[in-house]
Image 1 (cartoon, rainbow, N blue to C red):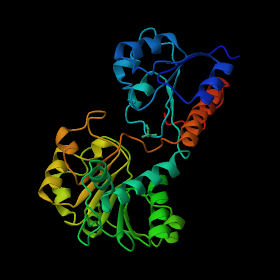
Image 2: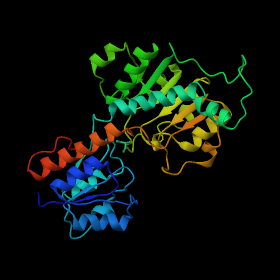
Image 3: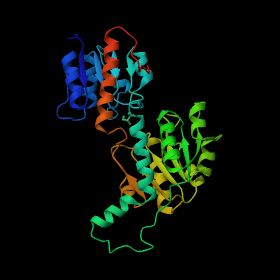
Image 4: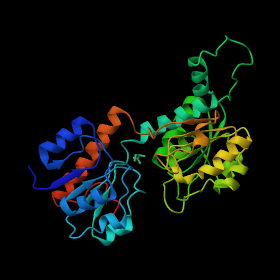
Length: 323
Ligand code: DGY
């Protein structure tokens, strides 16, 4: 067994917790209670590695713990906008994430939201369960057709590409995209994707817009009132990336006014708080950050963290180092 003392901030799949327990001196969180900022700071004083999730805010203050014992922050998740990476570097902390293993399931969930929003499936289910359904009729709950429509992707990285494949091969959708970085030419060619010169151009052209850019400071409120007004009135916005890429208040206004037809959201600006106004609207589908939430993927994410931890304490470079 390694000497390293490790703190896991939330419950992880049992198989991964067992694996960590067999290998390290590990403190688990059996109650799955979110840790306070003080508890997180104490963890940086007491453990060699802290393994957080998106629900933990790993701020400069938290990592300012004295004396600092921790050397590794092994995030359970691909997105790491909840970790102040510059502050981590300043404290010589190594930071890792879990790319690749959640790509397919997150793309599946983006398609789920797109289909449920377009076909009014959430609304239909509520209607039926409330005992309001009086029977089939030609004008009942008509939604929007998905097949052959245009999907606009903001971000054509791993998850954006996986969504493009599903939409193109599964539903014959045309793909347009914007990415601030050069896109993978093979992936572009495989789905006949058309590059746009700006986010605005994607919004102008798409019937469905799906966000797949990182939750960086530059992308905060990328989709604001002005950009929502560029979208077509029959278009839908899908967000499985990070909540604050969309200005939630502006989205509520657009959904109420019918500036856009609907939305499908898995992430929220003030997560886990969701604005009551948003929750009161029928033309939005709301999921509780389930993008990677399958048994297989969550185990794979945990095992990916374990690989990073193993490499780090073996003196090797962790495969998924981000800082
Ligand atoms: C991810 O991996 O980024 C998920 O959103 C959970 O953090």
